Amino acid sequence: MITIIYRLILALIVGLVGWNLFTEKKLTMQLNAAMVLIPLVLRVLMVK
Amino acid sequence: MTKKNYITAALSLALAVAIMIYTGMNFMAARDIPWPEQGPSVTDIKLLSDWFPGLKDTNGDTWVYVLQGQKPGGKMLVLGGTHANEVSGYMAAFTFIETAVVEEGTVYVIPYTNHSAMTHNDPGEGNLQYFTLQTKSGERTFRYGSRATNPVDQWPDPDVYVHYPSNQQLSGSETRNINRGYPGREDGNLTEKMAYGVASLIRAENIGLTFDLHEASPEYPVINATVAHQNAIDIASEGCMNLLMQGIDMALEQSPVNFHGLTHRELGDYTETMALLMETANASQGRLRGATTLNQVLGGWDDCYVLSQKLGMLYVPWDENGHPIEERCGRHLQGVYEYSQAYNNAHPDTPITYSGVPSYAELFLNADPAKLGGAHLGSFLM
Image (cartoon, rainbow over all chains, first blue to last red; front, side, top):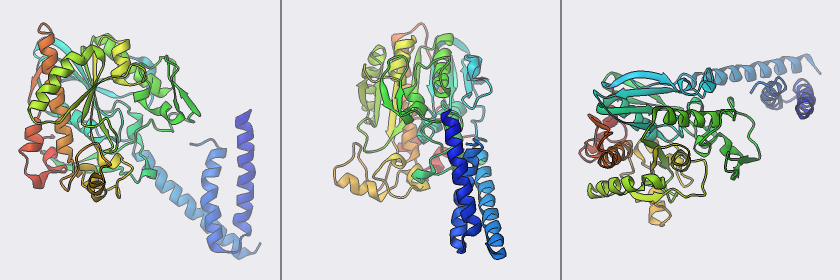
């Protein structure tokens, strides 16, 4: 159960960071969001 | 959202994915680790899972080199790479495998006792991934691993690690430290299974003498030392005296009864072997070190430690000459020799004798100082 909650929280953060990636106007912030997004997506997929 | 935003966002994402793929490939390549060449006495190369099938097809399974002598005798086990960032431990095992000519008895050598730990490293410590040495056959690459099992193989760590069977409590990350996992358990986590595999080998082969080769940071009190289980303290005392008479500064400590999970405690308690552990000084493990460089790892050359010595903060002498890998491997190999000689004196019916392994003098004392720091060690390797 705790793993499902963990993945749901991660999925929410992935959604928010993804939204941020495509709405952010500054390139540096977009790069920042892209770098943060990758490990979060891997964790949602339970890829270590 | 504008079209421009979409394009830059897609490019940013593509860049991040490209970095992930590149670093992922680098991480996966670390699983391809170098092994020793077959020395003159290697008669068989087995897997630890031959003694404990529970390790089969896991990243904890590891090669065991069997060096059988011409005459029967006793049996000895040498563990290198218990901690895969303690270079002299596994390089001494490599040197033994590639040079030893066993005359009586059988010697088992495991170069990477925690195989999983050799398949990653600690980038947060600024550690190296690889180093190279010029050997008889040309340039060879060696790995620099981590102290603990790869988290890809065993994850996550608990908040508190409870050792089996003592119930001693340690910090959670110690659950991936094989030298806190002995005697191991058949149905435990991967690290406990690896420890169980080593104990199974010792029991099945009736190993009389076991060495565990380590390195420690210069700020750690147990350094340039041998730790012996109480059942091995007599031979350790005799061997230690012989080392001291050769000018090798070696402290001898009896294994603490209440410090569980270590080879020198649990292998002595749960098997019939005489267990000894040796420590040399590795600058690249310490908290007071400067930048982690190849010279620091192989030469022990580090200005921060020279300063630390002057401030009286170290447990081992340190100057501009550092502690090169030849000195550290030489200590281990001479230690194995002297302690095995003491074992033979106590067990004349089951001797373990060998020759060909470079001595402390050959590796270090008589070496050209310009070749210390890896070049001289490489000249003994195949």
